Length: 210
Image (cartoon, rainbow, N blue to C red):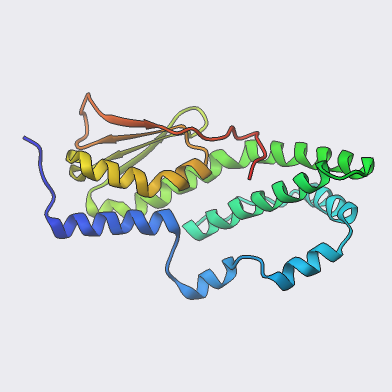
């Protein structure tokens, strides 16, 4: 017989999943994750594209790891935003009519791709560890698998309900896709042979995308 969680407990669990999907509600931390303003965009656009491409390429030569300190969802979101910013400038360079800028964009794209191959497995592992820490009090077991940390497994009595599985998947899907997970499994108790799984159509780690 499937064990049902009490309604209040269910609300707490889905609340944690919402927190994990969208980051903290700490305003002081979120001030550091504000989108670019029009003034910032104006300043960036005034710097020649060739210079921006060259500067970004040089940035990879310093070997500063983007994944050195991943202690929160906000930290992960910041790294994802950095990679998105690389995509934007690479796209701009590849669409340029200047051959030098095109070549620089291709060079930057390769460096970003190599960096992503190293960093995305670390991002997924960090996400797993944060989930594990946040959800253990609610008896949700979190594990990561796959040779490159591409499979996430969640086990809890909460997932005895198909509705709860569906709601959780809808809540987490965008973040899981952004982190390039390939599959997520849901079980309602450890040792269960059968489980519900979702295949995630996400980009390869090497792919530089929006």
